[in-house]
Structures are given as structure tokens and as C-alpha cells.
Image (tube, rainbow, N blue to C red):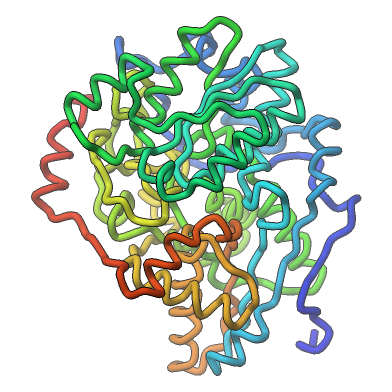
Length: 457
């Protein structure tokens, strides 16, 4: 098919929105290691997880056999408010770079929450409401997940308690106010409102917080209040499942025009958008049908894949959550207060960790100033102000396109643009004023954090 017949924006119709989520684990030969009970170090069962998560979500979390899971009709109807999202050919960026590469991005910022997080937030809120719960608790880093969940809870008339990483709470007041507008109660973490928060503040006085801290507080509140459950915006298998709508739509759109990506790139913090984007393509690779070059991009300040250890670790700083086998920097790792708040988790999805460990994808880390250079370039050329998290993928997409310019190869590059950066202007201001700095943890810092990893055979 000639380039002239491929539009700038490829839209699907309502009937083409996925009616089932895709579960990558069903096609994995090496399944992710099970979550472990922190007390017994035995695999977590349905009954073990029920006090923390909604019943239906626990079933999804533990499901390793069903490749496709039906999307409830009420969630399908909600998706129609903002899905399908566009697949965009970056013609202007290609021209500016003078690259023979073809660049595509799946844009998930066309909804009120401003990011892909709504895909899972509405599903988790739906199951909480269906179970008859009063409300849910959660953590948020950059605020995208908290915003999406507060919007979803408002739709289903559920109470929503959000623990927001302290540095993001202070850097992003408008994101916080959107959550409050939707009715959420937002608390900077670590806080004095929980036992685990007080312990963390005692151990790390003056800390800017981390996603691990906020998770601990949210779980404590959920398990100590009747009628509440904890929900998470990334990392978990259930979240990657819900986010598969991104990749399923992308593949349908590309298949319509006979497009096959060579390289698929996503930013990686906990793994929700990366896992969602690559899911159907990874399924083909797992089944031996096609081969793709998958690239996970993470911040150099929090390099779970590229410098972490593949080991069992707590998912939270307070060590109250189950242990997951993942690439981790240690649950006590306190990342620098960089501006990609959603990528500051100390670990990575156990599903993606297993795929990375088995060689199905690769990972790179990038420094903050390089990321914002790419973000600014993209905004000026493509007309979308990207979120800092998404800009990690933009950085590597540009780098790969420039490699094609050097070699003359006409590769097709696909990346995920997870959301907009309009609530991140403090970060853009720092970059524009020349005040943004890079921070890379030393080997000594990481070794100190690794020393606290739980001893699991």
C-alpha cells in the first residue's frame, strides 16, 4: 500500500472497540512466578487476596489459562465515550528528522483524565460497585492514575481515597485539584494518617515519598475500613489485562492498512501502558508467528530493568503487600524527585519481568534532560504536549529513527503516547529555564537497597 493512502490519523469505529481483553500469560511458556504471602512465603490464594482486592479482580489476577476475557457491557459502553483512540502517523516528525523510518504512535490522551489509566480505572471501579463496596483506596505518582480512578469512582458513586506521592502532590497541584473535583480525598504520602506512614517518616525524615510508600498507606486504609478495597494502576496482571485494549485497537488499525511494526516502544514504570501496547504483538511472538523488537524505556534515575535484580521483593515500602518476583531496585529505594512521577516505582510488572528475563524484549534507560529535549521537539513538530512519562518512549523512538537515517533502513516504529503533559508545566518550566538536572543512582546506593531484599529460595 502506498504511503499516500495511509491517513495521518487512523480511527476505528465503535464496533471495532475490543469486546474482550487479551491475557498474555495464557501464551507464555514460562509463567510469571506467583505472588507470595509475606508471612508464610507460600503462593497467595484467592482467599488470601480477597481482603485486599475485589473478588472478580482477584480471579483475573490469578488467571493464567484464559487468553481472552469478556469485557462487561457496561464497561464497553463507558469505553465508547473516549475510545477508540487514534493511531497517528508522525509524518511531520519523519520529515523533520529526514528519516526513512515510518513512525506511528497510539495516542491515549483524548479523555478527561488525560491518559491511558482510565482503561483500567473504569474496570476496577465497575467490579467494586458490582461487589457492593463503599469505596476504594489507591496510590498515585504523577497523578494520572489518581485522576482516572477519581473520575471512574464518580461515575459509579464510589468513595475514593488517594495517597499521592508527596513530591508530585507539591509539584502538580492542578492534577490534585482535578481529583478533588471528581470527589476524591487526596493525601500526600508518606503521611501521619496511617501507622505505616508514620513509621516511614520516622525512618526517612523529610522524604519526598515514593510509590512504594503510597501503596503501603493505601493498603492499610483499605484493609482497616469495612467495605473498602485497594486498587492499583499498574504492575498487577489484572491491570495489564485491562490495558490490552490499547494494543488490540492498535493491531486492528495497522492490519487494516497492511502495516507491520518492526520496533514497538513503551515507557516503563510499573508496566501498565507498555504491557497494554505490546500485548497482542507479544502474543504473536510468544506463539512463534511473528517477531518484533520490543523496547521498554525507563528513567535512568529509577532503572528497574536495566540495573535491578530479578528477585522476589515487596511491592511496597512498608512491607505489608505480597511479594512479587520482578526486576526491582529494592522496596526501600527512594528515587530522586524527577518529573516522571509515574515511572518512579522501584519494581516492574512480574509478567513483563518474566518476558524480559526470557529475552522477549529489551530495555534502555534515559536521562531526564534528554527526555524533555525530545518532549519539546515532539510538541513543536507534532502539536501535542506529551506527558513526561510518554516522552521517554518519544526519546527512544527518535533515536531509533535517527539510526535508520544513518543506515538507510526503512523500519516501521510504533510507540505509545500515554497521555498529555498539561498538568506537568512545572517540569517544562524547569527545563525551559535550564534548571533541570539529571540524577543517576550510584552502584553503592543500589547495593545498599539490594541488601534489604527478602531472602526467598
